[in-house]
Amino acid sequence: MKTLISHWTLVLGLLAALGLNACGGGDTAADTSASLPLETSTSKTTNEKPAQMPTYSTGTSEQPFHTGTLQPEAAAGTMKWNPGHYVTFSSDTTDDEIDARLDEIRKLPFKGIVVRAFWKQLEPRKDAYNFKRIDRHLNLAAANGKRFFLLLTTRNFRTGVVAPDYLRAPLFDGGVYQYKSSKDTLGENIALWDDNVRNRLALLIKALARRYDGNPYFEGIILNETAFGQPVSEVSDENRAAYYSNLLQIDSLARAAFTRTVVIQFINFPPQRTGALVDNMLNKGVGFGSPDVFLADEDHEKYVYPYNDLVQRRIPIGMQVESDSYIHRCAFDPPPVKALYTFARDRLHSNYIFWQYVQEPWYDAWTKVKALFRSAGFPSDPAGGLATACPRRYAACVSNGH
Image (cartoon, rainbow, N blue to C red; front, side, top):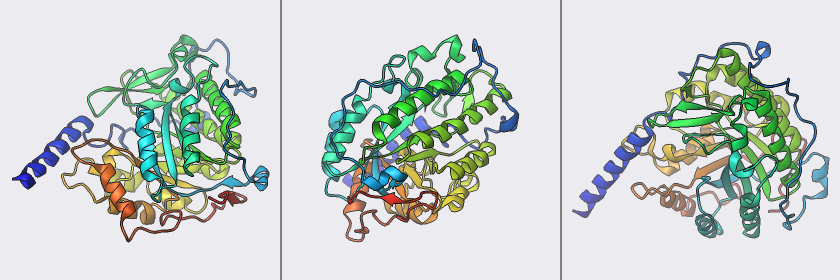
């Protein structure tokens, strides 16, 4: 009887998840309406004057770190390089929850943690940066001998959470646009086609780089997925093209600002924009990643994962096993966690695997992930079996002895 109840609990849980998330996560290769060349498109916004990419910087009021310094050779362009497995936490995960998980992974072969933060959390008011959440978890990770990634988030399946309030103004063309989610709700993304929005995001990235680029435990920054979504209100082809043109500039600026730190751009859709983004990433040394590790997924196999073959060993590869990955989206037979690991390692050539911490009791993914890492056959090397060669785009790499 207990086995039968457990079986139906899992089935009902899967049904609930699929009902909330549907299939495909809301952004697929079907978003093909933006067809203008990036080189010839500019945005039409309500800006009062043409915007220039900012060359100045603003400060932050946070306190300095005391977690060590990079080895001297890092100042000459050597990159921090600590490939391996990281646990990803959402922007809503509490401090106590992250503390508890850090305690769990202290003796497991996890290299560190990834903490997601919305732009609004990091800049609640214009030019008033609040990096306390980063500082707390970075320092605690360092105290446990673990590394830290920031996942800078400017789009989400909820509204009102990603962008600072000051951005929602005519000067920034409203700052955001809403898109339809497969969960029958609305998501929100920044209006990156507007040059003033781009400039404000650039300033945030520069402020982050000034504070964290020299910290040996701040392993990297991840820029969230490229999918545009299905806007509720029409967005012109011109603005769509300008969105991706400005994203190219943001990727380049982030890599230039973080001179010793891994920068990863999560790539998924739309496919007609991906080639130019990846070319720029290869040219600038921006790492390639994706928010989803899906087994036997037609869209990803056709439009996303071939780039893993193209960029391997040239730039970093960081792949995320997110909540839908554990249940295989529409499948009623969730893949074994070991299969996700093997796929991300062998098929996707990962240097980093970011394992999302999922708390749903009906399918306890976190327990299964821990079991994999504790298993006798799990690789004992510091990177947990992942590729460790320094990417060719870097002059040199340093792990600082950890």
